[in-house]
Amino acid sequence: MGVAPARPRGVAATDWGWRHQGRKRWAVDGVTLRIQPGERVLLLGASGSGKSTLLAGMAGILGGDEEGESRGTLSVAGVPPQQVRHEIGLVLQDPESQVILQRIGDDVAFAMENAGIPREEIWRRVSPALDAVGLGALPLDASSSALSGGQKQRLVLAGALAMRPGLLLLDEPTANLDPAGARDVVAAVQSLVSGRNHTLVVVEHRVDVWLDVVDRVIVLDHGSVFGDYPVADFRQLVSAGGRVRDELDQAGVWLPGRIPPVQLSAMRPGYTVLSARELCVARERGHTVYGPVDMPVAAAEAWAITGPNGVGKSTLALTLAGLLPEASGEVYASEALRAGISTSRPIRWTSHQLITRVGSVFQNPEHQFVAGSVAAEIAAGPRALGLGHAEIETIVAGLAGRLRLTHLLRANPYTLSGGEKRRLSVATVLATAPQVLILDEPTFGQDANTWRELVELMGGIRDEGKAIIVVTHDRALVEVFASRELQLVPGLSATEVVAS
Image 1: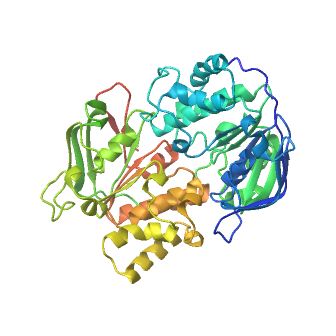
Image 2: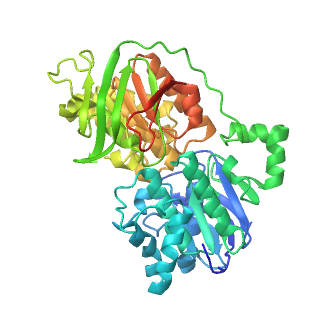
Image 3: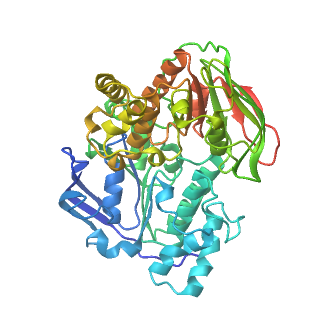
């Protein structure tokens, strides 16, 4: 990228902790560590262990007393992170919250403009940054809102790389990316930090892609440091087995090359409940994204929709769910699914008719949050259906228990970790017991334990006779869960259906 030398910034924490406003439990507590300038660190831990909170603390964005309280000390380059925020690059789990401007070139330039970098230097950096993350083929005036979730993740990373920060903080930077996109991102980051002019801290559940980039692995458990290893020692611990490996496994840490064992019964597909015929899909009228697609979905069956970022997977999912109109062709429901509704086309159903028949989990969990607490969020659908108080409480308690959310029932959904938000979004849809469940990246942000539990939960729902469609880049999920796979291929008018 022709990056000029930056000044690497170190991080120091002494008994540091943070508690979100209104929470009894500290998200992070008693953290003591020192990251030297130029070090490259992989931060691991279970969902909800405090990784994102620690990263936000390093970035100086946790807010003041009205958002929570802290104790102990946390510094970057020897001062509070807020004082050197312009030297810190942060990529959050949710790219939507960091994409600001309508044109992608302007969005990459935005942070540099705020930092007072000269205009001519800004535009020398924009295109190389987009090239580095695999978006260089797009024009600088391309619409950022038209990008897929994975492409937005790359755009945010381009903005961070262009800043040439002394401290680069990445929170699940490859979680929503296809394999090629993930390789692009890892290569771009590796190129940036290879000269040790930048300190790197990356949070990621899947460790394999980062072990060749980092020097050191720090593991959090229940908000505190569980282990701190040079990367060579971590590799040896994982490969040799023994007590430490077993403890990491039990804590939900993803171990290289290991898929958590799941218990699923044999699939017995029933009658077709939802079908796509010659379906073409579009976000905007007249601008077809993909098609045609033929897709018969049966009760007690699991489909996976796969393909590269931006090909149209999420658009197809929203169209199948009756939330976007067909560009051409048709999505239609069986008589059994539409019982009591005159039209077979889900796009013409009311929201009340949809929620008990076709439930959708969006790619971004926050797009479907409507309440101020986890309990109220799960209860929203059943309450809209007019269920009684006792029945709603039973539904909330049951789903919270199955999805490890019981201790968070009073928490604000927006203060949850990325993995917890994902599980909550699944719970809100399950609360109305739809016959077809469509989930966009359902395993995003999950540790090994919650991944296994979520897959087994979906398997149990499938065994109840429900149809499940997942949009995913998670090959492990496809291999252990789906019976049919719809592969979307850019530039082709048809898809290939294969048995998994």
